Image (cartoon, rainbow, N blue to C red; front, side, top):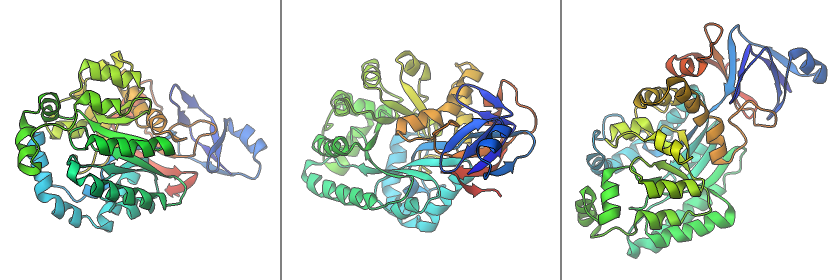
Length: 406
């Protein structure tokens, strides 16, 4: 048992002052220091610097670790040229990101305060790096393939990767499933995968309505995707429309990434099924997909959380940077209210969406915590300042174990 003594504790709804936290793997009690010393007399008391802030570790719910070799290889500005550049350079990027490359990406997330991440894995090459990570990991095995003739082979490969991830037995590692997107996965494959998801109660994610190209292809089998599918896959029409795709996820809460081009009916469906939207603002900007309408999500009572996506469409795996960009991108929203929502989106809301017991400084939750060194007493605009200013993270705890600091 240990006792942390910060000046301030950030909770989802308030800022606690002059309270301490007793913890081992989980947070046992939050109370004044003298009470905790009396209740836990053998506990080690850790004195913290003046103006220290204890806050939850950050949760990056959507990242592609396998593509961490990209820096200047891929084309930005528009979704289709970017996609062609991914296909053209796929082998170089995948083969160029060995275990050291992936470990650097994972460690960079830790340094920026990310104590849990959702790894969307297309090939399974990142499995060992994620298994060895200091962080909690939700490992999303991704299913992709729109050609019916290849369905059996693609599903066999998916099952092999899924089974490999199930063999990882360590605290804080969760096997999960990702369905790539409505345009890239055949309905037969989706139904087979979702049967496993429902039988085993696995966590589930999918990309949905990221680009105009996807919108036009699913609605009318035309647009920028038409040449892409005809030339590369000999397909003349979409394998399903958006309504058919979403229907597969009825009654199973899903994390849907991007959702920039979703229409009103799709938003109603997302809302009625209590799905969560993963917002990746930097990725959306770099690929020319526009800004997610957060006010529309709010109108439909849809929860959203913030994530980085991968280095295939970002320059850093840093949620503080991501939140900062979002703060400026959504200029039609009240600044302080948005800042508070962003902080919650990478802590308590992300934890709830992933179904894991972390994301807040609260009794009974996992002890995934950051110590932030503020430069003075915080004001009511603390959420804004946390996002704007790169305060030093002096300590990082994951499941109660110190991973950074001394």
